[in-house]
Image (cartoon, rainbow, N blue to C red; front, side, top):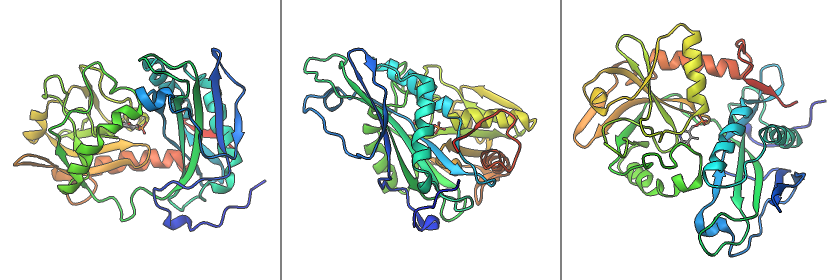
Length: 346
Ligand SMILES: *Cc1c(COP(=O)(O)O)cnc(C)c1O
C-alpha cells in the first residue's frame, strides 16, 4: 500500500540534512554486532574518549533511494556499498558489518521512511548514508573495542538545478591520498584534509580539484569526491587507473564502464598521464559519482595552462550525455536493467 508522502516541496529540496522518522543503528560490543534495528533518535552520545574523536576510526557510504516510473521504491546496487564499506572498515581495523545485513538494514530503514522518498519525476532522492565509528574508549593509539554502525537517510534535491553545465577544475598543488594509503577507502579522514584545497579551489572559481598521483605527480587520479572519465579522439572511454591503488572504487564509474561496453563502446582502463590531457588528447571529460551520475567538465586549469574539451565545452558532450542518460534510464526503470542493478525496497 502506498504511504502518504510528507508535505515537502520536492522540486526545491537542497542538499542539506533534515532528520526523517527513523535511522538504523547496531552496536559492536564484546566481539559481536547486536541485533540492530530502527531508532527515532537522531543524536549520538559518546564518551569524550571515544576512538572516533581521537584517532578518526570512521568510514561511511553514500547511496540513494528513489521512486521509479513504475512507482517502486528502489536503491541502486546496495550490495556494492556493502562490499566497499566492508573493505573500508577492514583497512581501519574496524569490525566489518556483514554484507547481507547491510543490504537488509538499507532496505529496512528506507522502507520505514517511505514517506520521505521523493516521488518519481521530482529529480529529488532520499540520500542514504551508512556510517560506522569507534565508540569505545582509547587513549593510547589502538583500535577501539566498541563501534556503532548507523544509517541515516535525508531527502535531497537534484544535484543539477540549472541543467548540465560543464564545470571547471584546477589541478591541485595538494595531494589527496598517499601511495598505498587510504585513498581507496571511503573514510572521513580522507575528507578532513581535502577541505582546505576544496575551499581554495572554490575561492579561485573552480568547482573541484583534480588530484595527480602523489608519488610521481605524473598521472591523473580523481577529484575530492568523484572519479574522472575521459573520451579520446577516436571515441574510446578512457578511465584512469592508479599504480598506487589510491583511487576510490566508485560504483558509478564501474557501472558506467559496463554501460559503455554494453553500448559497444571501446573502454580503456589505464594510467592516464596529465601530459596526455595537457596535450589535448581528450575531447570530453566528466566526473562520476552517486549524486550527479556524471558532471561534464569543460576546462581544467593547471597554473597558466587551460585545457579545454572541445566536444563538451559549452554543454555536456555527446558521449558523456549518452552514458549518463543510459545509466539514469536503467536506474529509473525506463531502460532494461539487464545486470539486476536496481534493488527493490518496496
Ligand atoms: C564516494 C566517492 C566517489 C564516488 O563513488 P560512487 O560510489 O560512484 O558514489 C569517488 N571518489 C571519492 C573520493 C569518493 O569518496
